[in-house]
Image (cartoon, rainbow over all chains, first blue to last red; front, side):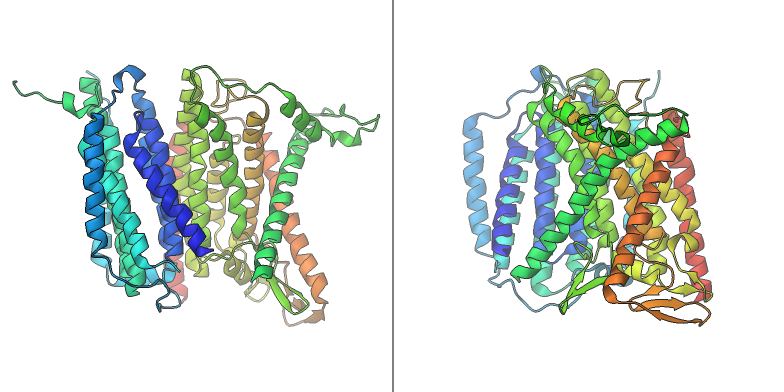
Length: 163
Length: 100
Length: 361
């Protein structure tokens, strides 16, 4: 069962990831990216990261991609301005080099099986929360400041300055 | 059972795909989306290693990474909107004010 | 192993069957309720062989009408997204009910079946994650119609939905702090305890402000009156203007399924879920140490499921009454309410809850 689910999520996420990069229209790329993120959330569940999976759906697929879709809809690009980018030879060359990079990286990956011993409450809200608020308190507070700066920056940049 | 290296291979494939997208595509929106794809691939490798080493710190880092990616997407899109309002293009090759 | 899988499948089947039927009944109930409130009769013409059954055949007639209408895709529209949007709108509404418990443990022949489809550790966060996915159906519907007005309607609807998601999430955090768990069956079980010896610890007793904020935010998420300017029935073009026949039927059904889901959530979080006051697993335990009344197990489970159903139906009925009582908000009023009034109130509620918990323990 787990093997079946892993292969489905892995193949769909990689295929949709490739389609994100290849499509001409940014709207379709955004939809494929949402599907990729949902498949990644499925992979996180298989890796016993239940909290991170729902956070991925809640924040990434549910908020960040909605923001991108908003901007794409507001820009409302016309079909003529979307050119086909990069000659086919460049894509093939890039694909080959990318594949070689993945093969070289795969040699470095550790050889561990998947049913290793783990704590009984691994990946639950309590486990992540107790680490986040005890050991990683400083990064947590710093990201809150970062989010404040990002909100102020986005609001100022997005305002229409009427001449 | 699925060995951890399978998840890492998926992560590597997604990362390389995102990198190719950032380097070859000239549409700023698709470049931002390829960047998000790279960040997602890194998150997957963090969660895989957290599972292997039985350390929830990997999940905490993914949490913070998602937050930073959200902030960066918001500001990046705001910059993109401003550029579109002044130059009416999202193609990064056209954003060239230097003398030829 | 296989029996467990079969049991989960059966529970899921029962839940979806009940949800879809209840949503269909709610369309009839809305029209009859509005008729009663406006001093008229309401739909009573649809009949089979002369038997009108108080208009209960109207949902069936609506469904048949919608199936037989012509199904078209506007010219120049994105065909895949146009077909995908109604499914993307209906899916989150149905799936949220997977973590809502509708009863305590049922013991059949030594096997314990918990009356909850999926007992997730991250129960409440799962509900908000799925609710945030429901924005996609609306946005894709507005975009994929190749129509300027429906695009504007889609943008209106989705910005309203994402504004009220924040207040919805923050208002429930106070409950999380009190019950110290995100699992919904633990929350419902803790609501059976007594406060001051006689008052059940329901969510509305402990967090009344959070209840008001949550109901308002959930109504705004669902785009019901008084927040239904995105659809704006007779005033302004909505986002599903280019949809016909069963695709429009799916949007319509998704809205009514979401009413049932909102009622189910409010029941679980604030009204004790399947808890009947003073009813424990083996019978009634009267307050002030008045005694114990023992009841058989099947009757207890039946009372619990019946109590849950009754509370959900009451919640749906009140939501329908709200629709036909209040006028609709203007769009800037909706946005101002969401960001400038409800968000600070939710944060204040969180602060006061934290202070009270610190003082009590």
